Length: 223
Image 1 (spheres, one colour):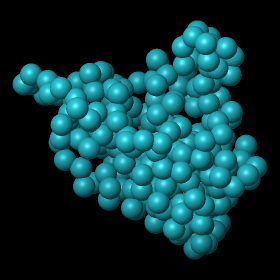
Image 2 (cartoon, rainbow, N blue to C red):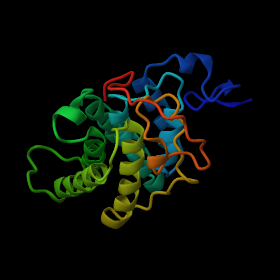
Image 3 (cartoon, helix red, strand yellow):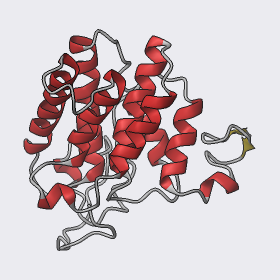
């Protein structure tokens, strides 16, 4: 018996039956509200393990923004109720399909959303330092995603941009976020019909190669 990752109630599973039925936005809010980790990657892995979290799609956008704000809050002790709510709302406003059709991956944009929420950026501060910081992180995260090959994958994008953001928060914001507690391994390979498997750096170590199969044109959800 352990505590539910979402509400903290005693639970035999990572998420109690009540929280296992929550929509993704509520899971992100509740997990981030009670989290104490300073590792955005560990936080993301915990939330991604929710049984109803989709393989791909819009849910990953607020996730990235929220875990960065949460890790920053835990590392600095700052009050972050407002920034966290803003990060989730803004991230969730980026629709599914945006990454493919608008030339900019939403996981990277979500990194900039996190910095914007933390720094309180507004449209009236066109050239403020906070705006430049947000844009620089978005740019670095976008280049990281652009360097990938093979099928697109929301999990790979999340892991990649959070690695970039963890280093960026230390170098540009002076906030030391913790790296992942171990090697980042994706536990969702068998659920993702477009998994790049051994070609992906996050494929589980020692994973057994699958038999050759035809790549499908779509996954269960639109990313």
